[in-house]
Length: 592
Image (cartoon, rainbow, N blue to C red; front, side):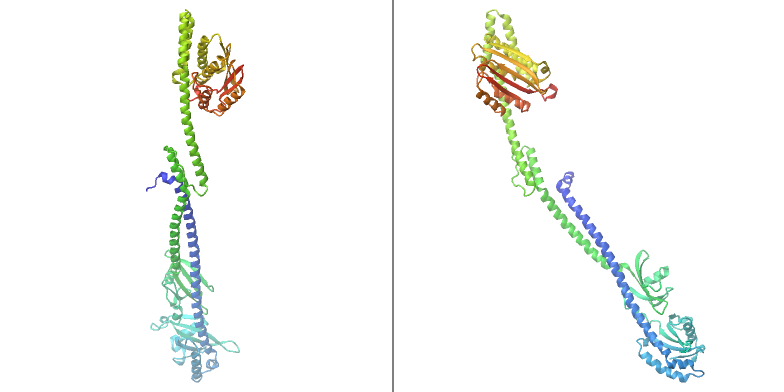
């Protein structure tokens, strides 16, 4: 089902989106922090592993140098001292050196890497294992070795063979000065010549990442042992820089890629043990871990989305159900009760809805009944105006007046009858002005007075301020009719009717209809007032029209104000007063 504006605005959708948004934010924060901590931890771990490997290789190089130092102790022996001290032919002293050298070689772990051992005195007479005793000027290599050791004693030196002779191989030289015990004066030098690859086995044992091999380079970036492509690139680009006497692990940029460079100084040399490897090779576990984290985050997100959709559906189910029921009510189905109530806070809302629906049905039923009763009351009111007896008696009176030549009185009575019916009909309108209502009741009284002139008198006292207001038609006449037929006619010598109209509390118009008829007992008055207060509907089905109950009911229905209606007071045998209280309404203020 495609999403529309209605779906997006639904409470269920908004709750689900709020939950999902919150979850996404939390997961992104977790993934971000995980990436940061994993990346940092993995990088630190990689650097630590690199330093550890560098330290291990460095320790092995130091062991090698210690072994070199051990062999050079041969130059401190008494036989070596005697050789350097001797003058002239030194072949005899050299014989002792051979035995000493064999002993020192046997005690060394690097005997096989030693190509030759030299003992050279200041008199330029030398001894080595290959040539025996000779003057160094006879051999260029020996002369160069003497000069190098003389300049840089106790340092490993990488010597290029081509600088001696084009056919010579490169080698590594390590020499030390021999001092006279008494004067500490240098009397000669002991030197060892190593194969150029003497360190290769040591530096190749440890590898960083997939291809990061160790190498030994000098301060100028010249490779002494081993090889590393990245180191070569850094050296060629001028990025290969070392700080002496400090073990270092630094990150450098090589053509846009991060490269880890680890190095440490090698004692008794101007060399560095170094290794260079791409950081991505060392932190490849980070990618694996982060993929696992991403996958877990996706799975958690999917599960959370389904959970939130389910929760939002459960949370909004009562609201959706209530909405559907209300739409059914809007369509006219007043039996759309909620039968399955929720077990949470919505239960109160659903109960109130059911209660409201029941009250609505009751109100509608009452309204229908009221309308029926109102129509019945209206019909009764019209019936009272055209009651056969009233019309017959009125016409009979007119005929009598004509017969006795009282034409003017007959014409006046016809006019009153015309006004009475015209005002009563009022073109179907329910509301008329106070003036017209007074005119209507006055025409009725004139007609009745013509018939009962010997027993009926009346008076009208109406506040002129009431003339600007409207009122419900046929309100006064039924009460006056009731007063004549039930009060005046039943009293010997008749009586009078007074109609007084005035304003009360600047909000209501009040009409008192007072007759001096037979009156009523107090108990009957109380029942009447109680019935009208409770708005009890009761029709008096007799030839005199409808009574007090129906007038009161009609006023309550039209005005909708509990203070409006009828109130009866009476004294038996003397008088009865029916007070009518109506809301002051001007024509422009009411809905016609």
